[in-house]
Image (cartoon, rainbow, N blue to C red; front, side, top):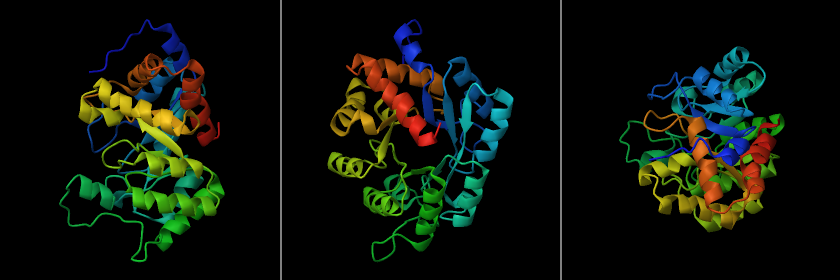
Length: 289
């Protein structure tokens, strides 16, 4: 269980102008703790700089624009698009529209990826989306999506793909000029990316989004948080983005989660400057703000 110490002034100071690039809010098919507007209001009250809304079933780009108009300019509210079946899968035309509307991140398949189906033992009529062909190369539509992302300069998120898919995706995306690649929660068991692979991708210029949601299955035990600490120490602060991936009904709000995350990082010996890099500088560079 997460315990928040609201009198921890250093934490609250770091939280000012922080960015959370991974928030799940309602409306959604999955029950959520807070709405888009509530997520933005809470982040605004904490004087954060920006949030990025994510949904597995639909684009959040239009939703983010409406929330931005309501909330005002003191907080940046962004959206993106996940390439699951319900959003058209690997659909370049849909990606192009999302980018034109202001998407800040395009995620490869998450809950509909073949890797997710396999790891979660999902029995579906569909096989799950696999981005490689029989020759081990990217499918043609994936190249078209990469081209659009490269031209727009937004973030390519790896979603719930397997390490094999991610390695090839990052290599080809970098060749095609994508500068902003964010590996989605590499510690989570669905992705479960080994340190040597992370080191390889870090050298290729990828960032790693280390999410609190990873801790859910471990009941927030200190030993599980140590995995995040070890990951950052081995791979580097310079390539790390701290996100919550919160919004679940059984978790604290994303802002409370980020407060706790910062507190735990301080307790584990990270300096204020290092944490600022992971919650402010790196995400702001990725979002272009």
